[in-house]
Image 1: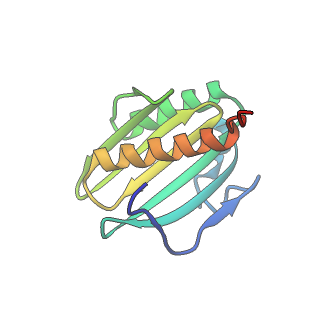
Image 2: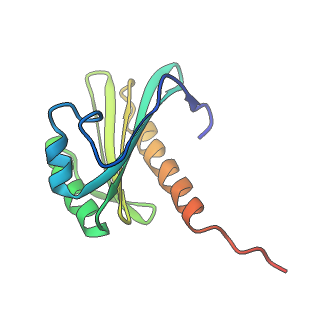
Length: 138
């Protein structure tokens, strides 16, 4: 995504999500999260965070997405071969996207739901491109 620059420390977690979710890890484990990766960025002069959760299944990802969207009072909508929800208010925006057996989270320190949705969709497309490389034509 144009203007997205890595910043700060990225934090990767495998089976133990307690480092990523201090005090709330069991909710994620019980929902089917088997691992996660968190990365920090700057974008348009603000901070952004993206967390990729590896889930036990596509169904687990979509089911957890529905619960998390209810938490932020956001409607689940279709997005680029996925389902997503985004909320914005009080100077920030955040959202979730379920794509296959992955659940993505993005937050942005600006009240810009479109930019947050773009973060989620860009991440989803990049993940899809990496897992499904095109065959070279002869």
